[in-house]
Image 1 (cartoon, rainbow over the protein chains, first blue to last red):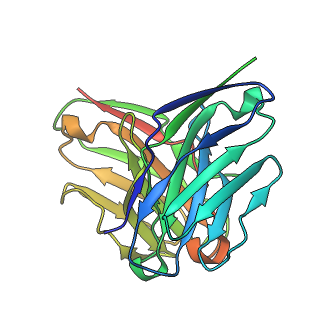
Image 2: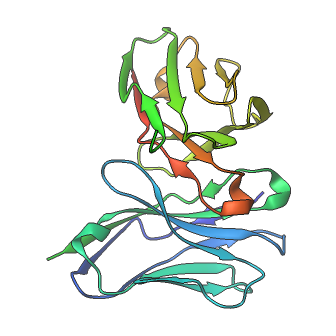
Length: 115
Length: 116
């Protein structure tokens, strides 16, 4: 069974600085998708960024980028120029098209951005 | 509506009571998912609908949990004879065509269930 591991329960960063959140996963499949979701205190989760495993190029969305290391099964999220609004829980998620239509989430990393 | 709407936002039930949680997905979204998020944990998959068809219910923890989406729009998650371990936030999410096509689930704000 696929698993997703986020080893950093909490992280903090000063406003305007850069922070990297770690995620590792376990799968024997070659074709899959990886996601980072953000869950602010209001609880509504929103997609931050996605990566298709067959794409070698790392995904980027404005201040958010990933470091996808397929062989190492690592998928870290880098947040540049951190803003107070980035304070939230961040969940790494895995999707295997052969396992139906469900996302498998990690346990999350709580990110606090300080002024 | 503009987003996924869930009700009630908060529910307190006595052990043994039945509860019903409602999800109103984004209009036109084919796929609908229920997740359970325990305190301090990531969401865990419960069940998935494509239109009115329940294609996967492998995550439902027991036969006390039942979900339906009779007209392919609004969905209800019912928990019978609630137990304390059912206390969690229940998240509903919808997607236009499924995870693989869009890579994005649109989540509601969740229903927090507390069983005393």
